[in-house]
Image 1: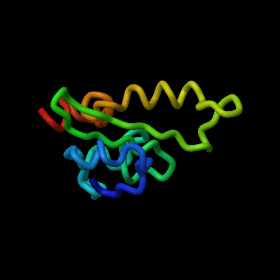
Image 2 (image 1 turned 90 degrees about the vertical axis):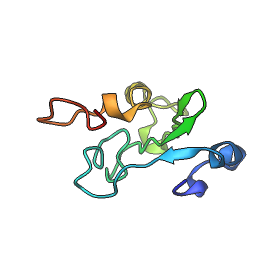
Image 3 (image 1 turned 180 degrees about the vertical axis):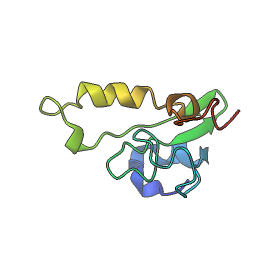
Length: 102
């Protein structure tokens, strides 16, 4: 896991046992600047993916800056985060005819 302090303490034990699916940290990586999962996007959600026996776990913590109604996440951000739980099919690569994992 890249930085366990970014995961709430109550969930760290669960995610510490899982393998994180990491992106290349360079601009050459198709997902580096993706709003949903890119570690290089300045204001993105930075959704992280972890391999589990059942598939993938992608915890999402939405920053206060994306608040819609007081105390709740903006609906558009919730929708964006729900489509980002599987990075390969959800992040389009301009000009590419297939996903990078193909």
